[in-house]
Image 1 (spheres, rainbow, N blue to C red):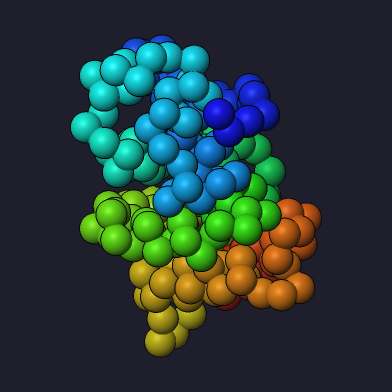
Image 2: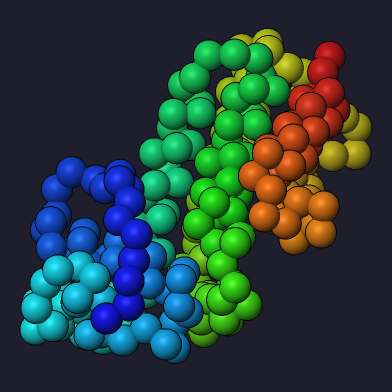
Length: 207
């Protein structure tokens, strides 16, 4: 049995407690040992359930992996909602929104030696779902910036740019920051980089 450190990971209310345990065990094991080297047996033992219980909820290991993506997507939504409703300046709140999406994945996977394999697995099993999550998040960022504009907290986009283009630039630059050698594995460095991006975006939309 592969050993995993128990985490107090927040899970949603509702749904089977055993299903949640399987998903969280899979997340921890895939991060520690990679997708290929983690078996259903490993996941069952880590989740403290019978192997047949795993198969009762999931057809195979790929289904567990996809359920992890669903779980992470919901965690991102909760973190985004908290950032949007938080107090502070527009820069503070936009930084929080960027952290909600890019920071969580960084926390979970940046120090995993199996990250290249996990990225490959995400691409093979869940490319469409990841695209949907990106689209949903981009729409959320655009709505947030427009809400700030509507309340007068910021102005509109500068000539030659739309809100969607600003969001696109934010997304691509934030994604690149995760892979910057100066940021790799350093959560504080990523937070600083995301805040710099938020400052630039808000400054570009000042009256």
